[in-house]
Amino acid sequence: MLLTGSPWLAHSAELRLLTHDSFALPKPLLVQFEKEAGVTLRITKAGDAGEMLNKLILTRANPVADVVFGIDNVLVGKAQKAKVLEPFEAHVAATSITLPDDLVPVDYGYVTVNFDKAWFARKGLPLPRSLDDLTQPAYVGLLVVQNPATSSPGNAFLLATIGAMGEAKAFEWWARMRANRLKVTKGWTEAYYTEFSHNGGSHPLVVSYASSPAAEVFFSKVKLAEPPTGSLSLHGGVFRQIEGVALVKGGRERAAAVKFVEFLRSPAVQKSLQAEMWMFPVESTSPRVDALRHAVEPASFDSPSAQAIADQTADWVQRWTKVVLK
Image (cartoon, rainbow, N blue to C red; front, side, top):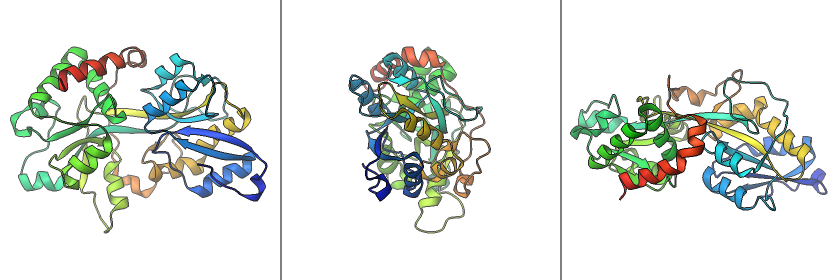
């Protein structure tokens, strides 16, 4: 997608951005960046973050982008192994939310279990207080998750269980969940908009995001005082996802690409991304938009080490497939 054909950019250089399908910022902000950087911004959306990175790896001999947004703390190890990112120095302030070198953090969010308030009120069933509760007969067939082989939140949720319990106990839990009629979908959209009871499905628990209840209020056709859904901070069921931006190795327009990195950390973007991509800003001084008051940040989260994620995720996903699906 070529962003603009503005007169001052008629003969400007082209800055190629590769990103995932969820990337969204107001057009006026992007046009302002083009004007200040003196470039035309061409945005290519390449599916989810995993698909985006695969495209970057497959085209590394002839890069299709100069800058990439959306590689996160799950995928960064794979990106570094493939050597598709280029070291650089951006003039951005250090924050408490960090990523490995070559990747500048932009936003973060939490993968959690969400619940349908009306369903639980109607059934009179208490909310689960632990992952172990979900393996009990009272919660049979209630949870829908995404396949970690095809879904970013599904993979993040798997990693949270391993980070909290250790590999052996985590897969024991997954086996018990299979026996308790766990529902698996290919991706988040199917899980949330087809299988989740709040949207007409039969499952009142779904792996989603801590910000999903806020989005429910924001996009509701009728004014809501409170969200119809909530998120649970179950031990072993929360993963903090951190998204970053990086220069593509072998890309063109390096100076403009660095400016784009700094642009994503600017106050205007850090504010806008909150209700556009439903993530939290990494800049601690960035004011929270009103819509996010319905997004409760979990007090804790779980994850394997960055090295373990880089080295073992592929094996864990294969093991998950055997335990849950075969």
